[in-house]
Amino acid sequence: MLVAGGYGFQLRAAQTPLEPCQLATLEPGRNDVVVEVAGCGVCHTDVGFAFDDIPTRHPLPLILGHEIAGRVVATGEDALRWLGRSVIIPAVIPCGECPACVAGHPTICRRQFMPGNDGNGGFATHVLVPARGLCPVPEQLPSGITLEMLAVVADAVTTPYEAIRRAGLGSEDVAVIVGAGGIGGFGVQIAAALGAAVAAIDVDRERLEQAATHGAGLTLDANSLDLKAMKTAVRKFVKESGRKGIGLKIFEMSGTPSGQATAFGLLDHGAYLGVVGYTPRAIEVRLSNLMAFDATARGNWGCPPEQYPAALAMVLEGKIALAPYIEEHPLEEAPQILEQVANHALRRRVILTPDHRASKNGTKLADKTKVAG
Ligand SMILES: [Zn+2]
Ligand SMILES: [Zn+2]
Image (cartoon, rainbow, N blue to C red; front, top):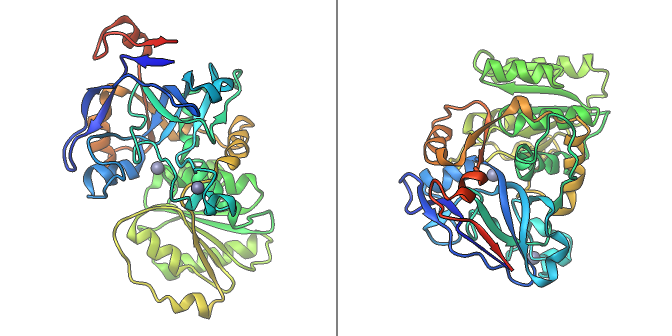
C-alpha cells in the first residue's frame, strides 16, 4: 500500500521558521503503518529542536511533531489488523527486542523511534511509523471528545501519567505539581483522580484558577510567594488534608529553571521528586538534600506504550478534561504557532489539524492524496 500526495512542515535548519514541503510517497514496511493525521500537538521539545539548538537524531530537514492521533490508512503485510483504525501514536516507540526492552525498560530503548526526531513527524497530513505500540482508540467517542483532541494523550497526558504512576501516588498522598500549564494541567487532574490531595504551583493566575476547578485543593502563586512561604503553606495543606504527611510527592512539570528550583526546594523528609518538565538550562542545587531528607528523585523519558490504554481510559471516563487545556489550529499555521509557543504566547496546548478535504480536493499544497494498493 502506498500513500502519495501528502504534505507537511519541515525544519530545514535550526533557528529558521518551518517550511511547507511535499511528502515523498509513503510505503510502509512489513510492520509499519501510515497514519492520516487527525491532530498533532505542539510540544516544547519541538521548540527545543527549532530554536534551542537541541539536535534532532535524524538530520535536518525533518518534519517535527511527536504528539499524534489519527487513522491508519495503509499498512505493511504484518500490520493489516490496524487498517482503518483510529490510533494514538506513542511519542516514544521502543524496538521491543533490545536488552532494555526485554528487561522491561522500554523508555530507555536505544533503538526507539520518536516521530519528529528519528524520522518525519506529525506536522503533516500523514506520517509513517512502526505499528508496534499503537494505542487503539474506540470508534465511538464520548460527546465533546474528538480524535484530534486525543493527540495530547501521546505526550502531554501520558508523560505526567507515567511519572505519577511510578511514584505510586494514591489516596493517602499529597501531590505537589509545580507548573500547571500544558503538562501540569493534566498532572493535577491525574493526581486528583487517583485520590491524592493536590497542591498546584504556577506563576500564572489563570492557570492556577483552572487548576483549582480541576482538582487542586491548594494553589500557590510563585510570583508572590517565596520558597519559605510555599513550604509553610504546603505543610499546612498536608495537615488540613488529613493525610499522614509522610513523603510528599512533588512533580516538576514546568520545565523552567525557577520551577525546578522550587520543586527541589520543597523536598522534605521522605519526599519523592518526579522530574517531568524539560529545560536545557542548568540550576544549582544542594544534592546532599536527597541524602539528608532520605528523599528520592526520578525522571522518565515518556511513557511505555503499554500504559497508554489506561491513560486514555482516564480521558474517556472524564477523569481528565482536555477541552479547557487545548486549542486547535490549522496545520498551515505551524510556522507561526511554533514561534508563539517558543515565546510562551499561548496558554493552552496547540493541536495542529490538517484539512484532509483540502488535500483530497487538490487545493493548498497537495495535488492529490491517494492511497493505492
Ligand atoms: Zn513532547
Ligand atoms: Zn528496545
